[in-house]
Length: 128
Image 1 (cartoon, rainbow, N blue to C red):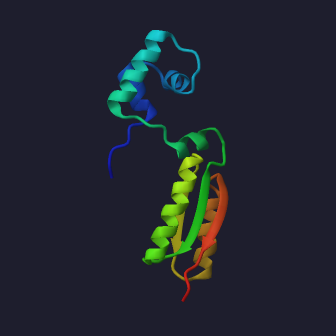
Image 2 (image 1 turned 90 degrees about the horizontal axis):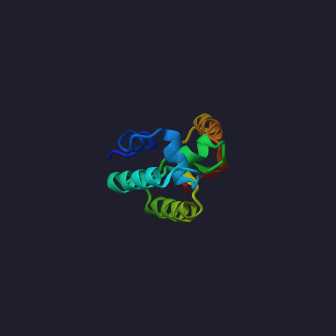
Image 3 (image 1 turned 180 degrees about the vertical axis):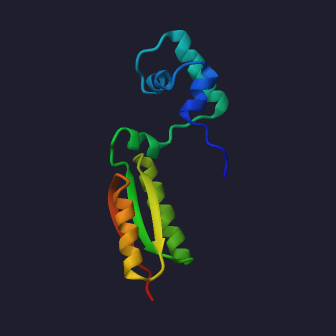
């Protein structure tokens, strides 16, 4: 998995606090010099805000939970791609959990996702 730059890393390189980086990103107060320094580091490191982390920290329901029967079908891939495309435009993250046939496992997966500030929970079952 590729390294993902986080706000702490930006703060360290810009020699400011994480809250200062957050203020700059969200349009809050910071001096012109600090804004320029943070912007330069963001550009250099390729930082992009992580929607899921941001929504969790703000207590927002910014995730769409999907519980699906484990499948390698091509149609599943197409559906997931379409769902993710639509959600990305709305800055909503997709959390996917799979199960293999047992009703108890499916229920456990649903309960697990419910604890993640999800916006909606949907279940998807392939035809047998």
